[in-house]
Length: 355
Image (cartoon, rainbow, N blue to C red; front, side, top):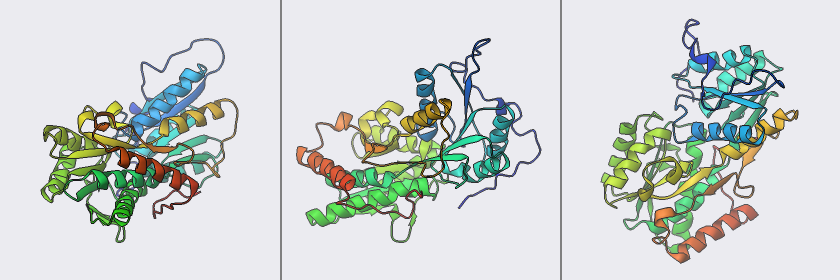
């Protein structure tokens, strides 16, 4: 499902960038004990995607706060062809822990890990199935199910929408859960709320084919609004900011459910956000790096899978919508969490993490 191979044309693509930069966090600790180096490679969304790259970097920052013997740095990939260059660059720099961020980096990370079996790698949102890669994955379908139920209950138009960046598992898993949450609401309430932009049965839907360009996100959400949607969930990284900005400017015509990082902490458009389907990447990354720095060998099996039961995924507070969401609906959404965690409700998606 990858759209480009991680072939490096020539050796100069990211020669300088492979050094990585994080000026405020990468302290050059002259003498003293040998530092444990944790080095992160972003995917094309970049460090300021307000999404999973930002979250993973926060996890490294938190690990450094907890153990000041840890040095952290990152390099931002500009294109898929950079992934392998950047990962190999950090191997050559003798980084102790190399973190790859995003499902698009799976193939490049697998290749780098196979070529360097004694190097500890970690990856967010993928499981390449290699012994020296510690996978951190998230069953976001569970929390997205809550969000779908919530959106169905909040929609006045009876139509809600979603779209993705690319049709890859870390994206479609949100969309699957969201659609099933709406279906659960319809069944429970005898309603017919429609989901626009995604068909779980056929796995077909709307995509920007980009995780950066806000105008692409706005274009897709404009189309959904034109079809009658009054709540939209973009799963497209920074491209989704085009939707949140337009929603806020619409004066309440439609609102948004954000993903990955609480949108009221990561975007400037909190007034337009009902909630966020949160993927707790920071804690997973922090724990992994602290364990590795403490000398623990991180096992590829079972790795880490975040879910509602272990707080690896959740829905964020309602913030500006706190007074707008009916108490009864809040209680129902809370009960869904308990039921999913207990196994009373089973949420399924073809994109759920493999162990």
